Length: 138
Image (cartoon, rainbow, N blue to C red; front, top):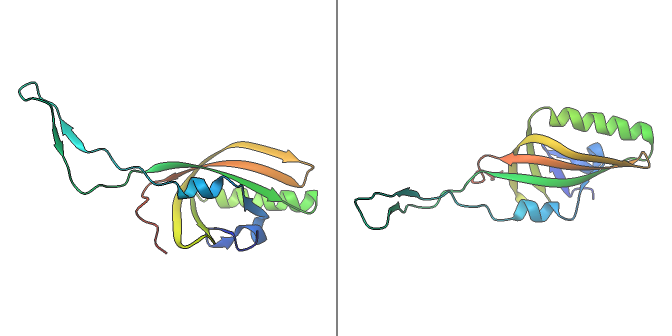
């Protein structure tokens, strides 16, 4: 889990005790949709005109499931508060060991679900927005 996930350049596991759920990597790696082509439909012509240019990538929403673990309740709340402060910055650069030369530049939108178990384990569902999927180089 260490060196697996980096958030804003920090090792998420050593900093906050955070690791990715098994669905998060596939969510990040899902190919991005293209923007729709410009179309013009006129009653004066058959069919419609489509301006075909080099495809551009569309912005996308991401849902990442992450887990926060701590050895005791005090450490849990310290890590939780520190992580919430990081989210409050608004920007979240996500990088994984599986794609070392790719950084997902996202904007934090919300945490749609939080569940806590045994006061030392928490599961979060983060909602992120990637405005420009073409800007992923380190």
